[in-house]
Length: 245
Image (cartoon, rainbow, N blue to C red; front, side, top):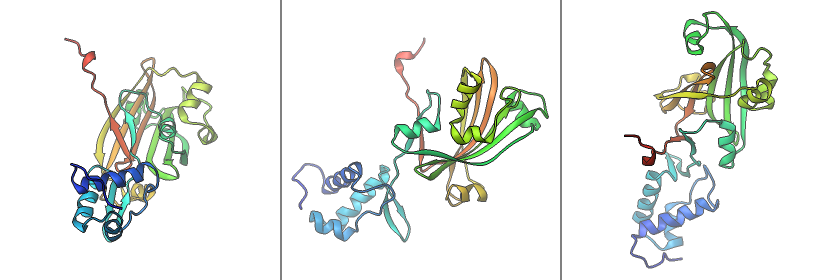
C-alpha cells in the first residue's frame, strides 16, 4: 500500500495513517506499534520516513518510547477544566474510562497545627483522614489524602467511600452546598512509597494538587494529591469576552 500523492511530506502522511489507527482503536493504549520494517513494507517508504513520522507523533503526544523496549501508544490524556468544579469520578466517565478507588486508610485523628490552619479549625480538633488511590481502567492515576472536620460530618464511615464518590456522600447525606474550591498546583517528585503505588520511578515528575473546598465560606475539605503527570492534564480557557476594563 503506497501513501497517496499529496503536497504533504511522506512522514506527515504516514503520521496521519498511524494517528487514524490510534483513533479507530486499531492501535490501543500502551500497545507497542509495528516495527520500522513493517511500516516500510506496508507503505513503501524508507526507514528515515518512518523514524520522522514516529518522532513527530512522540512530540505531539500520540506515542511514547521506552528505552530498550520500543515505542507505544500513549494513553488518552485526562483533561480537567480549571474553571469547572472537579470530580475525578465524573471526569473519568466523560472520557469512557471506569473510575475506581482503593482506600488505603480511613481514621479519626486530631488535627496538627498545619492541617487545622488549612481547615480553619482549632488545633487538635477531631478530623477524618482518608487516603485513597484513584484509578482509571484499573491504572493508578493519583494518590489523595483528604482531611474533613468531624463536626461537619459526624457519622462518616469507611463504607461510605467504598459505595459512593465523596461529593455524592456530602450532598446526599449532609446536604452540602458547595460555595467554591481553591486549588494550587506545583511540580513534585514522588517519594519511593508514592512512586511504587503509582507504578512510577522516582525520577518522573508528578503534579501536586492542594484543594480547599468551601461551603458558605466555611472550609469543609482539605485534600493533597499527587497525580501522574503522564496521564493527566489541566486546561483553562481564557475568554476575552469576559474581560472587564
